[in-house]
Image (cartoon, rainbow, N blue to C red):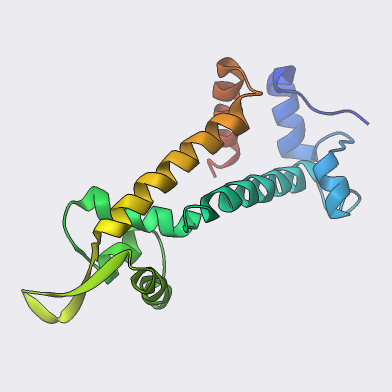
Length: 173
């Protein structure tokens, strides 16, 4: 079996987009047991890699009492610099409003956010980061940075840029 490399250029991309990749094997596909299913195992490899990376980051973040989603919500609230409406927060993280309510329940139970009334509309609720939320966000952001460095140490900078460009091409539809 042949693994497609980054340096195979336009011919490889044309082959991938028109005909699927050449016979390709990946340890990730073999673990999933899907090495002989579907049109192109490269897609399954990407999905498997994404799952492994997410699992590793989530496990590391758990030590700070956060998930990647909670870290993202705290990030948006801190970056806003002021309390955000729940619907505004849902829009920022591309989340349906019913899910943001459940996420806010968990964040509030953990003491990371507080709900406050909107002074201009008493029917509207805003989310505000607590001091504990800021502390845990800082700890989680540090863990995320450490994980990113550890995960990417095997890729020299030129390979990272090349991979980022290839992933951009893959997602450009």
